[in-house]
Length: 257
Image 1 (tube, rainbow, N blue to C red):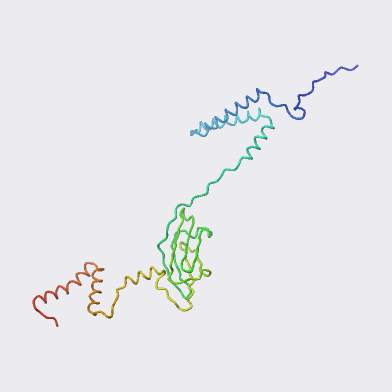
Image 2 (image 1 turned 90 degrees about the horizontal axis):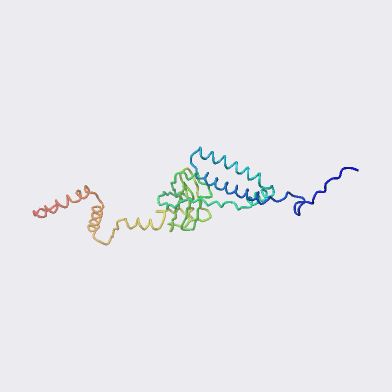
């Protein structure tokens, strides 16, 4: 008869098609290695000297290798899946700084347009979607976002005359934004004395008024007073000189012809 083969005991339950779970000693060793790895990572973040960082980096790689060797492949795959399921870091929106109010501008007009010129260095480099315009019949609002880390805003209300909201537009040139407002009545050869109604009223207040019903000499005196008040020292001396001479002659009894 042939040799008898020993009868092997059946494998433990749960280990028929997969490796047996790690023993408590192996699990404890992996846990200790994980703690060592975390401590090395903390030290590596704080290290500033190259020699120390190199040593800690080498130790980190060594411990990671030991962890992989002692951890069953099933557990490693599970850990990788958990890492992949972690939500991505939320990226904070880039702040564009504070908003600068634009008050300096130039303006001109043609047979069709009223043109406003705003000088902003480098504005041609800003994406077109960052240059926003809003028109009404008597106002416009310009907003330029993220130009050299700042926002620029210009609001003009109470335009002197109504404009076409649909026809008005903007153009971006080198270091300049041009706003083109279409006057609804430019075809009638209307002319803008100023850009806004407030500017027109301010100019009218500055102009000297002449009342034809008053004494002409009184009106001349008022004009001289205005010139005297606004003039410099030389102008005041020039106006004072004939007045003083006239007073001296009156005191002496002399008569001017």
